[in-house]
Amino acid sequence: MLAKRGLHLVKSLIYLNRDKRIDLSRLDYNRLACLEMCGYEIYANKIEGNVAELGVFRGDFAKDINTVFPDRKLYLFDTFEGFDNRDVGTEVGKGFSTGDQDFSGTSVDLVLGKMPHKNNCIVCQGYFPATAKDIEDKFAFVSIDTDLYEPILAGLQYFYPRLNKGGYIFVHDYNNEGYKGARQAVLEFCKQQQIPFVPIPDLGGSVIIGK
Image: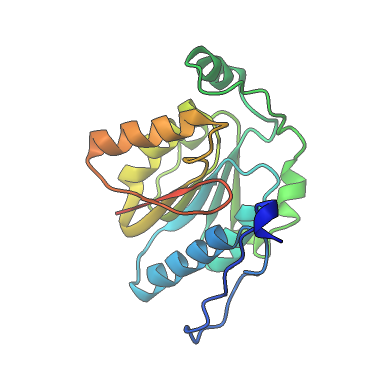
């Protein structure tokens, strides 16, 4: 019955004797489980660096990042006003998507209100990568969820060189036919850098890039 409605459930990680930090019963199980497991590997291997999300919207996944990495600074990069017209112009011009989805229904206060460790959060509001120009930091985990080609490519170009060995980057919407620019940005960057990535079957069709 669930499968006919496009809902596919899997059992939790029943063979791991670990306390789970985030609620894996929510709809996007694969993405959340991969976040938690990558977080475990980062701590187990003593990978240094802070964490970030580019494309925060209402902060739901950022809350999970903040939960999994309670002792690390979390950079929150977003316009907090929806898509920037410069990126939409490229998106439409290249035929990747219409770029007309409304992501303006958010605010800094709304996002910070969800964070369990808000004192670790650093809000970087505005157009990326200009909002990162004064940041001198290394990263262990980064989520890129901006939907559009230009900011995804800019995010990979900025964060991958600053990702410590043993760290991970999640890129959302790689297998989302509604945002074909996401796939194009990942393919271009990974081909240029000669690095592999792993697609995962979450709701947005994310990929995981390791270093």
